[in-house]
Amino acid sequence: AYRLVPGAVRERWRGWRGGRKMAGTAELDRWIAKLQQCEYLSEAEVRVLCAKAREILVEEANVQVVEAPITIAGDIHGQFNDLLELLRVGGPAPDTRYMFMGDFVDRGFYSVETFLLLLTMKVRWPDRVTLIRGNHESRQITQVYGFYDECLRKYGTANVWRYCTEVFDFLSLGALIDGQVFCVHGGLSPSITTLDQIRAIDRKQEVPHDGAMCDLMWSDPEDVDGWALSPRGAGYLFGPSIVQQFNHVNGLELIARAHQLVMEGFKLMFNSTVVTVWSAPNYCYRCGNVAAILRLDEKLNRDFKVFNAALHDEKSIPAKRPAPEYFL
Image 1 (cartoon, helix red, strand yellow):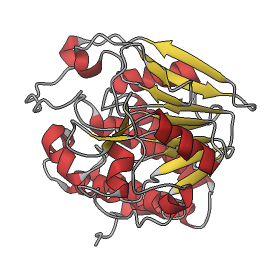
Image 2: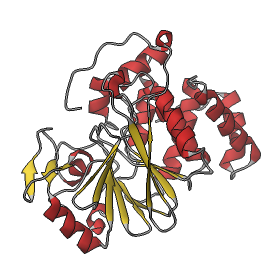
Image 3: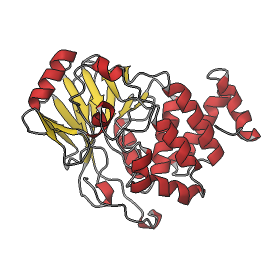
Image 4: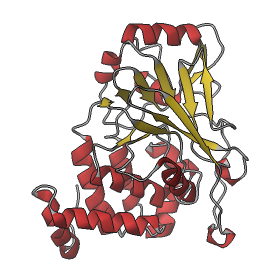
């Protein structure tokens, strides 16, 4: 249950509720400008933003259909300055249509600003920005790897974390570009043969510990024969024969996914039928990797744009309790 929005915010938002009128658009533009300066929104503003985002996301499919040209991004992990660099390299929304494949939060120092900027862009330009759920868009994971603590530190309560995690439950599980490119955060599942089976999942829940929905966010491609257990403890490893069969049954040319650190920013596998895109340069501010985004043109031709970490002012890096290590 949500409390009533304070009068000033409610009044500014009123123009949106009857349609995309000037007042709502102006408010969203103001929030985007504020977030681009790495200034987080008030709790009341976050509550309004998340409520509107849920209204939009509930209408989207488990496998959201989108069109090329489009630019695909992988994990961001709260590295806000690097997100701004990504948007500089890829071009600003709405001029560029974007697909973000999850893991917006945790590990980086600015998960609040990162997720709220992406969410505001989604509400402002819903047909130009697509957000897919990653394994870190989870109540359990964010209480361990940073987002929950960051919300407490910046707002003094867990309310903003609660508003955002409720939005997580509405994010799509994947996307289909021009019927030929399937985008997903992690990978495939032995429980899933067709895209229609993904469409049948009840996604509006916390990420389960196992099963099809879990696998989509946790699995990884690997040079194995068929399926293998994942060292992550969730999801599976899947080999080239699995990808070949899944792509054939569903009429796909490419599976685009994120989830794994790639030092070169992207990695093509299995005769270029799977690509991993990683968009957090110098991951955790120490890994030394570059990042990449993938642009698909109208004919689905691929153009990888590689970029380095943005310069950081060390004084702007807050003190932070180190998160437990797990598979990078």
